[in-house]
Image 1 (cartoon, rainbow, N blue to C red):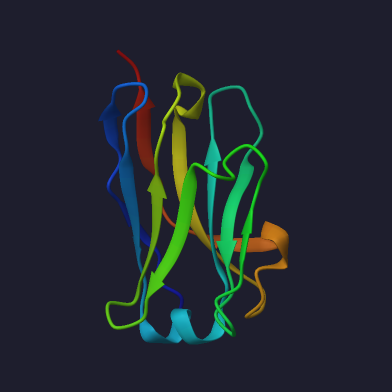
Image 2: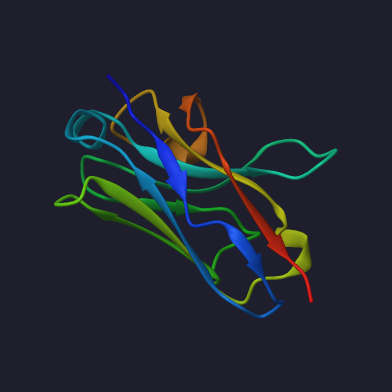
Amino acid sequence: QVRLVESGGGLVQPGGSLRLSCATNEYTMDYYAIGWFRQAPGKEREGLSCISSSDESTYYSDSVKGRFTISRDNSKNTVYLQMNSLKPEDTAVYYCAAGRSTWHDRCRQYDQWGQGTQVTVSS
């Protein structure tokens, strides 16, 4: 059974940092790539960063490359998204999701979702 529970969102000033956590279980970590996505009001959901379970290869969208870092802690069954240099346009609900295979697939075809966590970047 896939398990995905996000935490770590909140209010942060522009230029600040947050680390999001996606708590999963061993089954999810072993058999599924995990990705981070976001959706802002009135906008389509956007794939930000995804990590393979097979070789821990990663994918980043252009919008977050160089600012966000995805990582896995297999001992804690948790996937993290470290977000630095946050901008007001990063404000959104952030979701973690499981892909259809062990490969990150450039954040395409992800169809099992957590409940989301709100990130607000504002002064």
